[in-house]
Length: 214
Image (tube, rainbow, N blue to C red; front, side):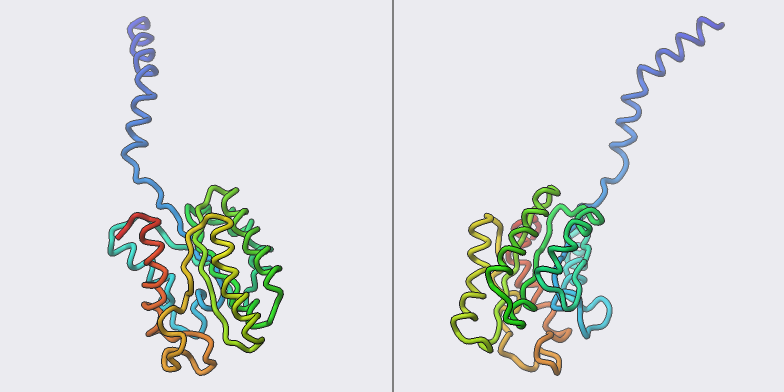
């Protein structure tokens, strides 16, 4: 009887790895995370909960039966320097498969150095890549408050970063409605809820191809 029991246990131990692999294969895979890393334009400033474009992105992915989940780590008032200072923590917390970097608007509104902004964005991209996250860069444009030379230099910097770092680019987050005052809150800086689907569509033109989800 004892010999029979030993033989049975030995056979069971040999089968255990296969049984374990089968069990793991039956478990649902954890969803890959898309990290939205921006400022008030992505944080939903002045909007009802769930009306911001990252929330609409999650809804669209769900409708397309995609396993991706969206983590919105955007903060109102954030600059590229602030984003750089907290990127490592955000990457550790969310472990994103893809990071959407949508920073720079506040740098431009403050007339900050374009060179410093560019350096900060490049270092954010580098940090994401070290964490094995793909990156999508979102460009911004600003009013000509600081003169046409600064305005153009600011606008052009995003495409230059995208080329240098070889990352896909959404040229302008507010593409198609930046001149429509009715789509902005009274401060004329932050889009209203009705504009959020337009922002999502602009981002999706590039993001959808990156995710191979349409």
